[in-house]
Image (tube, rainbow, N blue to C red; front, side, top):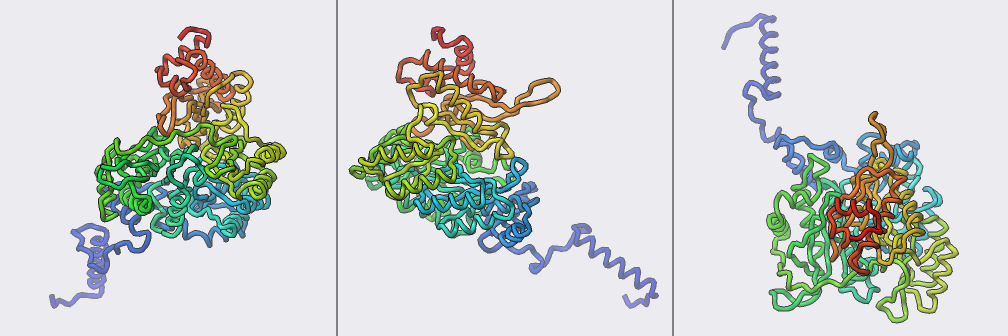
Amino acid sequence: MGAEFSPEQKRYLEGFVAGIAATRASGGLGAAAPSPAAATPEPVGPDAAAHRAMARTEAQGRKLVNEEKIKREELGLDSYARMKQHAREGVFPKGGDVFRWKFHGLFYVAPTQDSYMCRLRIPNGILSHWQFAGIADIAARHAGGYSDVTTRANLQLREIPAGDGPIVLEKLVGLGLTSRGSGADNIRNVTGSPTAGIDPQELLDTRPYALEWHHHILADRSLYGLPRKFNVAFDGGGAVGALEDTNDIGFQAVAVAPGHGVAEGVWFRLVLGGITGHLDLARDTGVIVPQADATRVADAIVRVFIEHGDRTDRRKARLKYVLDAWGFEKFLAATEAVLGEKLARVPPQAVAPRPAVDRFGHVGVHRQAQPGLNWVGVVLPLGRMSVAQMHGLAAIARDLGDGDLRLTVWQNLILSGIAEADVALVEAALEALGLTARASAIRAGLVACTGAAGCKFGNADTKATAEAIARHCESRVDVDLPVNIHVTGCHHSCAQHYIGDIGLVGARVPVNEEGDTVAGYHVVVGGGFGSDAAIAREVWRDVRAEDAPQHVEALLRTWLAHRADASETLAGFSRRHEPDVLRALVAAGPEQPR
């Protein structure tokens, strides 16, 4: 403009211009479009897909949950140096680091215990005798002197002090094992048929497929930091099931007949969306997968989930909810787009019925496919073993078996490769350890999560309740068919109560008008898995923990008195009656006519 300004006017004008610039930067006064150099850079690298999904969620005006912000700020895999520094200082994590440490398999379980729990990764649940003995040594030196078998055919170590967490992780690596990604928003331990490779009726040995997927996960950082946890299982059609229909992805070995546009032989049937805590079992997609393509297909499915899983609501951040929103065809089309090819589909009649599971196959002595050899299913009281028992079991596997110990989803283990002549010796050795290969129909199918004794989410002491149920019922009820009783501490359903013949889910039971509560359970009945798959229905709410054994006894007595015939299972009987009718039968007593 050419005008001369006084020093005071110049200061005013400079302040005025600076104010306009600041207002524009904050989005006011028709802010100028940012230059390309100032634009938010496109995410790159292995975390890019997850970060794009987070950004897309925010661009839609939706709020990310706290865990997503923690992952974006620093993925747990990058926190190892700080975790080691905490260990040197003897302190446990705080804030977001509690979540980040889980990426390494370390869970700070306060306030229940002021210690870590470490969860391993054991593909197909199979360990060598020397690995098993090595874990026992770690448990003796750095944990509580015991280990727990989980419902993912895995092991957990508890009561690990603040200074010993990284030591445990590094000693596991020395054994050829890892706990990486066994917690937080990651793909969890890969399960498979526990009798893989030794089962006379199996269609396929799941071990190489579980192992390939295990290593694929470990080698690819882009498969970490999912919207929520993710489960994958392989079932080979053997006598002991892998509960693959409770997983996000289940691969079921099936025999496919000729004449349906695909090669005759054994394929994997693809089932998706299992999450029993949310009342859903995996559903058949109509897709069959060549054995060699299982990892490729699983990888593509996970990548679709990474892009489209819910990052705003932890309760809905599972594959089931993407499938519910999209439908299976849209989801499979997205998977095919990632794969770059079509998936094979066949009608149901192209697939032969799968071999039946043996509900007692995980306990006792059973003949293997290899002539003259047996597997021996060892009963572990609610999945727990002392260090001395672990060393003893490792010695039996080394001296009298093929060297392997096979964990199952039923919280026990199997010793394989036992010669016929050595079966009695193995049973005697187990007895010397305080263990057995024999179990009642009740105890053989008894499953319990950690519960309030070791988990902050637990509403009741599940292992104590399960033991009380077994002790009470074994001496009072003569059960002649297999029964599965699942006791879980909260809605997370780690003991999968909805697939049990009887399921108990921990709850705080109100006892007065002032709002006081005590430990207790809601009771469900009629669940199942495999060819008998079903979600259990609630029959009682708010049962006090001390009353749970009597309620289970009453259910068992009512079933045995009123079943249609001696072959009717508890699940079948429960499904034949609506919950109110079943309650009335129990209340009337077993001597009443049905």
